[in-house]
Image (cartoon, rainbow, N blue to C red; front, top):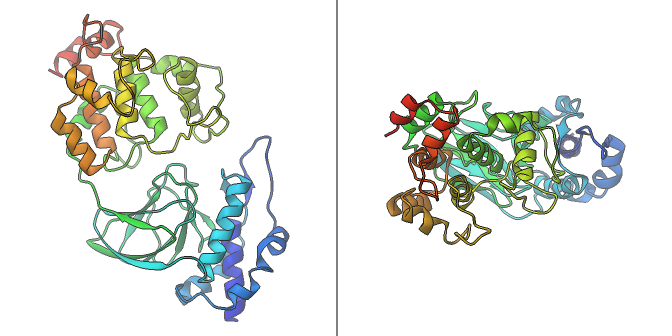
Length: 374
């Protein structure tokens, strides 16, 4: 019986990772027979060693969860194959090492593509950008952003973009596999600035709030650039496309990227890949803001990942201490709010006015609101 449950656990893991692809030219359907041919039979010997790191109650729920095999995923077939192999090795005890982490409230449990994690005690919430990034293997479904992590459920990372678990109890223990790690929690410092910018329609949160303790995505950074330029309406009305073939999710979010690429405001990480849910670094966001202020890295005003800090200090956009603090703590949405607020009162490259004054002249910000920023 135990052996059959192990096989079912593995089948569930792959069904959760595969299922039906999103609509497009590369639609495919992975069936149970595919799993048997590709993985279950070859994994038979490995599974015989047992799942020593998995609690019995996880396996007891697998039979029912097998019914949920048509979950949506945006992963490519190559990524699915890689995760399938990773999951098989983890669950058979044959891949890497397992580590038990002790975490505190606010800490995050992250990992690279294919890392596994299991909440053994305490409480945590799911951090995910698309609802596809973290797979709840035990339930046989993608883990929804902001939902409570289920204790003794086995999760696997489906995208290397900072998704994972955020601890909400005073302490928690989490078992991790293959690169799972703990990232100390960050306490936001600029909530008042986020609130101020929110009232101006520049900085927005989600149903989870401002999420200031979270790393911003590349898509979010670009959206903030377009708002600082006063071009959000143009972006949302844009009907063109871009060369990026990896865009998924929220339709308006894709339009921001199409528009930003067409205007030359942003590049992809390759000619055809934007990586919209990947993390945006401080250098990326400073580059966007410096461009909004009229500086041109292509013309040699700065180099995006080396001299952008120096230029930001030189023009009064940031202080050296603020930059040093970010370098020490990491870059979060909290800092996006700070840099954006500073940008509104910083002079444009040509010295004619501040960025906030330009928004007020264009009608994207009232003069009363602008003077309230001083």
